[in-house]
Amino acid sequence: MGGTDQGEAAGGTDGARRGPARPLPAAEAGFDAVGLARDLLRTVRSGALATLEPDGTPFCSLVTMATDADGTPLMLLSRLSAHTRNLLADPRCSLLFSAGGKGDPLAHPRLTVVGRAAPTPEPRARERFLARHPKAKLYADFPDFGFFALDPSAGHLNGGFAKAATLTRAELLLDLAGAEGVVAGERGAVEHMNADHADALALYAAGAGGGEGRWQLTGLDPEGMDLVAGERAVRVAYPERVSDMGALRKALVAMAAQARAEAGAP
Image 1 (cartoon, one colour):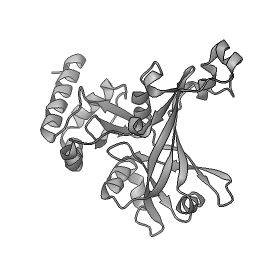
Image 2 (cartoon, one colour):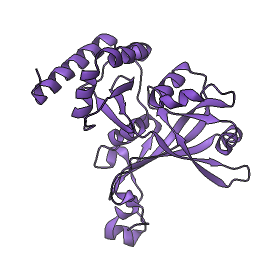
Image 3 (tube, rainbow, N blue to C red):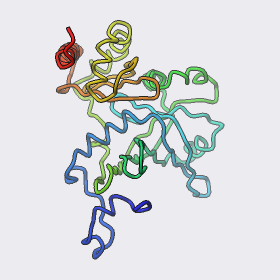
Image 4 (cartoon, rainbow, N blue to C red):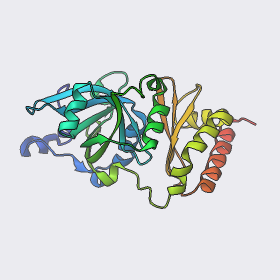
């Protein structure tokens, strides 16, 4: 099974008669494909970027990644790199988000996002990327570096054995309509939580399976928060979508109170 795509393996004996089974659309996949894909987008911080050489040869390289508020993949790339020159000539590309872990690498979920990547002047791209990768501040302002955003056209999710699905752009990205206030207030809220509420962040992370550690909030959006502690990252979802900063504050207070109660803390 080592070289068998798990989406094909899902076809079973019927697949053997008809040929390899195609992954189902996310809505028909039989598991939360959209939730898993968005979690991978938000938590995986490095992956493989595939671009096209001028002669059409595929070229794959390792890059670090973050996401915009809606989940759009963001990269900080040097124009001296082959993959950047390739993108500037032909923006078509794909990014592989792989969770990794112990044991068989093919047993862990991964997501391939296909689309077009282009330079972005959006200040939020810089803020979110550097919050996710603070060491990149050392070179982010070098003249040859710039931020790129990948506008996805589709996604291919492999959630492990017999769990595969295809996703549309709308399923990969979060609709921010009606939540402009949350997006606008994100940076202030992130700074406030990191400065004054480290205990609550630790509770949120622990409740989401992140374990103990000095957790830092790197970004938030209408559906959840992104936290990191060293090399670990975790996505924390709110009980329900929030559309303004008042609703966000209420959700965070309620989540902290519930986490303290479950942990038996005063």
